[in-house]
Every structure is written in C-alpha cells, then in structure tokens.
Length: 404
Image (cartoon, rainbow, N blue to C red; front, side, top):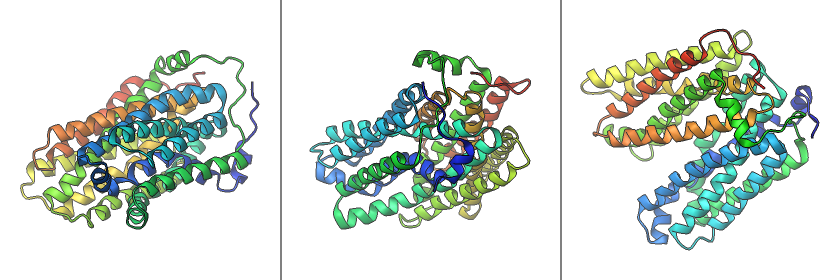
C-alpha cells in the first residue's frame, strides 16, 4: 500500500512537470518517425527489401499496443514509478540490441521489445495526470502535454536524417537509448509516486472488466477508436495523395504534413483557453461536429470536384486534422475521470484499441487505393461521423459519477 506523495499544487512547482510527462509520451513518435529516413539504408545494409524494413513499423505498433495492455494494470497495481522504470528498461534494452542486429528478423524482434517497453511507459502519463487533477484541469494539462508532444513528429524525421548522414542508421537507435536513460534519470530525481492509496488491488482481468462494463467509458473508448481511425487514414494515405496525386516533392511533403501538426498545436492552445469556461465533454462534441462538417466538405469536394486544387484540399485537411486538439485531450480526460484508481488501465485500453483500429483504417485506405484522394477522404469522413454517434448512444443520459 502506498500513499499519495504528490499533490496537484506540488506538481505545478516541479520544474518542467508537463514537459517531463510530454517527453515520456513522445517515446512512440520518436521511435517511429526518427528512423523513417533510414529505411532504404537499413534495407540495403541488411540485404532485404524496403517493404521488409517497413514491416518493422507494424511490429512496433503491435508491440506498443501489447505494452499498453500490460502496462495499464501493472501501473495501477504496482505504482507509476515502477511502471515507468520497467518500461524504460525494456525500451533501452531494445534500442541497444537494435544497434547490433545482424538481420531483419532480429530487427523485428528487438523493435517489438522496444515497443512493449514504450507502451508500458506511456500509459503512466495520463494516469499521473488523473492522480493529480480531474475535470477541466486534467484536460488542460493533457492539452499542454499535447502541444509539447507535437514537436516530436515535426523534429524526429529531420533529426533522424541528420544522424543518418553523419553517423549511420545505428546511431539513431543509440540516440533513442540515450533519450531513455536521460528520462529515467530525470524521473528518478524529480517525480515521486502519485498513485493513490488502494485498499482493494484487483487483478488485471478485474481492472479491465471495471472499464468494459461502464457504458460511459465504452462511449469514450469507441470515440477514441474512430478518432485514431481518421488520423491513421490520413497518415497512411497522405504520401500517395500529396506526392503521387498532387505531385509534391519529397522535400515539400514534410512541409505539408507539418502544417497539419501546427494546426493541431493551435487547436490544443484554443482548447486550453476554452476549458476555463466549458466542460471537456462540450468541447469534445464541438471538435467532433467540426470534423463531421469538414470531413463532409472534403469528401464532397473529392467526390464531385473533378480536377482537385491543392490550395483547397490542404486547408480542409488541416482543419480536420487540427480538430484532434479538441478531441484527444478531452476524450482522455473524460475516461480517466471515471477511474481515479484505475486510470492507467482505462487509458491503456483506449490507447491499445485506438492503435489497433488506426492500423485497420490505414490498411483499409491501402486496400481501396485507386490513385485518387477518394479512399482517404471516405474513410476519414466515415470515422468522423461514427465517433460522436456511437459515443452519444453509449453515453445517453445524465453525466456519470466516478466508477471506482
């Protein structure tokens, strides 16, 4: 049994508290995006095809989902610090092993180890936020984290390209190893345990059942799944749409992709301001309704527009993508509010199901590929419509009370 060693007021005086949590969450985008520029080089040096190396991304996503499913109950049972250090240890071991990998099969294996560690680690960040805050303040804190976190997908490919040119692809994973070690040192020094006192410590099955049996939690869960679905539909389809259909160069495409991330940062900042006067559920619904409207315009423009103009297409995508700034943080705050002593398990289930559904929607875009933006726009629009509809069906009625 542990006491709650950190209060919400104390958290605010820890230097870089929000930055530390964002840095933990950034493990996934850094480990995914930093080595993307090196994929052709890795394929050449290991004597395999580029698709073989790209398969390591799928292995990473699968391992990351497994890590979250295991790490949620582990964190709720043994504590946030124990979960973080265990996860970071696996992440560091996997990163180190990759630098010595002799074949693609070993790369796949060590990427799974790295990803499981990353998944175990990141489920602790929203759980720590829920330990210390609730309601609007929880959503505000998660939005601040997201603003910092969005720097990772912007900077990771650039950093990976620079390291690749100067020191070889193995040094990218050495850099990730160092990142994990520094994080562990900082957390050991400045971040105490935050998990609340628990007289009842259920096993993993009971913890997941507590979440699944709650209809309001299921509403947030399905909403997040379709949110991830629309996000990964764009991420999967954007290279072929921007570089294939619209003819962007490889140097211009990152700028177009980065514009979406900047919009996401702006909407996160707006969300923080609006939370001063509005509830997270209200802002979540607003973000989802804007996505439906934008998704409808995007799909209608692609379906009926004939010769598409990129100067119309990109702003519509930017607004759709940016609305995740209203959707993501408020969804996470909503589900964690329901489970003050089971928050890591709830966020683990949300994250793992979201990644799985995102992988499915991305694959669907690939299967429907016809050389136009239509499959991407269609899947994005369908996911945008289903997210609030299914959520409201589950959450119809008065706002829930705390579930555990």
